[in-house]
Image (cartoon, rainbow, N blue to C red; front, side, top):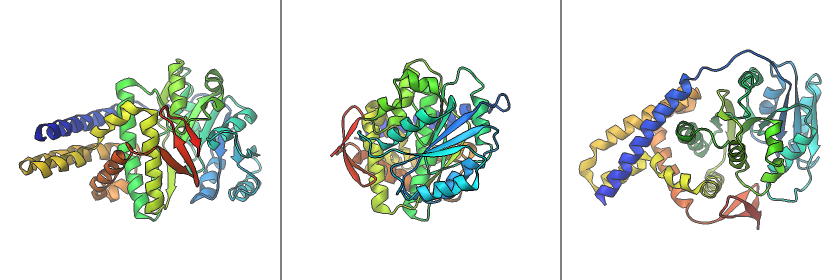
Length: 372
């Protein structure tokens, strides 16, 4: 048992060192600036009153960019987000915008339905698909345009800095996103290139959507973002991790809601990429080291080594890349978050049902899902 735990700890430390190198390589790539400013269509699905919704949406209306439009999609005119959208449209009449109503989709993934309908109405070939809980700086679209001046780039995923609400559990989740989650993306990028995408904000050329058979071809997938990037890379399109960081306003969920969200996340990940999910074990050096020391107390010096390497990786990702003040201020919560996250990783191996916006779904083994 001691040898097995020691091997797992060694593997997790190797992963942590890979993360440090992956972050260094990402930071070494200069961020492109200037160049042509193509017309852009921003696609915004909305559903309900997210915390800070009006400020999130306003940040897109206030872009320092010469030619862009914003399309919104809501389930129905009675959706609570609609008055917010209409108020902003009236306040910024100089920005071309419209709102579409999707109705009840004939398949499980509502977001896919919204993006599909907005893509059909969008006037421009460069599309920025962004969730309603995303907030950006005024130069965001200029940054995206500069990256797409490289004609080899067809799809890019924006790293996001999670900003929690007032609850302790949302704070832990934000630290997870800003250290563990992005760290895994950076390592995957270094080892095999970007062969996937992650959802809050994706910029893409319209030809990619056409080539995969339209966005509706993703209608049965829970992690449609991951599948979208996987298909784009498989079809030979250039997929990258952007240098345009966005803010992901995750709200103030209490423990029950936060736990349900985490369970949905881990169960979805296990079915979207099962091999990667197993390998995720090595992203937990702190829990693995604690297990080793509990079994073999004489191994306690490893705790210092683990804490140092894990701390260096967390600092590079959260501060150097994301400029995240939360993790810098609450660095002492990183080990606790690692333990909390490890618990849900273990739980992800059990169960095949989730709840999403109050509706129960059953997950299939290939990443698709269906309403119960």
